Image (cartoon, rainbow, N blue to C red; front, side, top):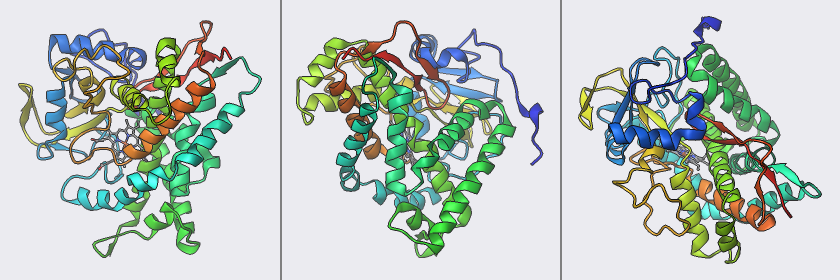
Length: 405
Ligand code: HEM
């Protein structure tokens, strides 16, 4: 498609996060919270020219102003990458008003609280199965052997996408988020592979319908009109991309955190699964370690926190940074298991607020409960390091632990 290895660009390590930030820098994965806090002390909006001009607001006010303004900021670009990057639709996340509403309305019923609650028991049994696979082991990788599997199982149960292809999905996600922003050839290749795969499973549902979401999407209509095939492919592309490493990162960050806080684990396992403490604890994991950062393309002249932005500029939507803004949260630097007032924006805000939040919350809660009850004394393995994914979805990809049964 006209892209080759020269489409790859190398970037030097960041030394100035205010004027030259880069979300794919090696420091971002493990140190992002310190980076945002340090930027916020200097100014509300950081800039970079690494991917064309792109801005990064780090306050709740700045992030909310962008997320709530669809007149000046478009979702046609939802990640910061090379400005000449080829992009294909994945509605509703890449749609603007007025089209956005119909796409979102189509997907929402499949993620209703009632539908998702029905998945709980099966999901618990699945997590217990993963834990049973660790029988007899003294050490484990809590990311590789546990957290990375839970959301794949959830999304496959919900949609009918074959779970046996999980390695394929994780490989697409890795290349799409970690490599593609700097490499158009990778972006095109991943897009082609995903499109061919999804085209085949959706076409199969047209001839062999089942009682699943794939069949529903294969036949989708909005206001009585069939949806374009390209957009149907985009819905599934989005569910695979949005539904897996997001929750994998949240559960993983929670397990990484609790491995270092045995006092908090003791408080949690002492109460029943329905106790409010579990709810406040998982919301605090979402606030403190919010994994998802989005982006927008500027389509009209405006200012954000006094900073002028122009059509064609990119905006990073750092929901995770807003969750650490002292103007919005009391003692944001403290992880409080029972934080009562917690209006975090891990799931975004405005018209694009996460469609999958009920599913994500269930997977997080169940994933934490089952692990902490099985291994209440686990700790980080001091001989091996946790590794973090940087960029759009930030979270631990390996978490070596001692199980300390
Ligand atoms: C902890 C896990 C998750 C987090 C933190 C998260 C975060 C987000 C955020 C911040 C947005 C807003 C995007 C924007 O403003 O551009 C979003 C949108 C979305 N998320 Fe999630 N997400 C998670 C899990 C999921 C899951 C499990 C699914 C289901 C497959 C999902 C599906 C979606 C969809 C379809 C949208 C687009 C909504 C729209 O454009 O109207 N997410 N998510």
